[in-house]
Amino acid sequence: MKQLLAFIRKEFYHVFRDKRTLLILFGMPIVQIVLFGYALSSEVKNIGIAVLNNARDVQSEQIISKLHSSSYFKIKELAANYKDIENRF
Image (cartoon, rainbow, N blue to C red; front, side, top):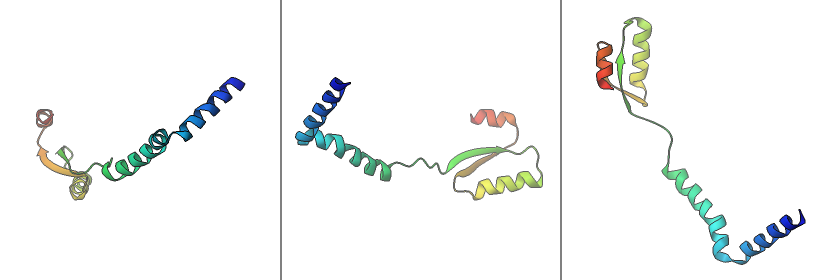
């Protein structure tokens, strides 16, 4: 265990002595966090969907209207049967 602690101590001295290694060790992750925090988003919007409404009742029409008013989904087509859905895939 003493050898491991001595090795870790030696490596820390080496990293803190060399400015380039210190920049890579601490600077690059900070740059990546800032860059990816502003550039990347996992939010999905404007997904085109086709809707098959076999029920044709009030509840299903309410669901379709909520999908239509949402910014996440855009209804591209109202399918008439399962074959239309399979053709879309």
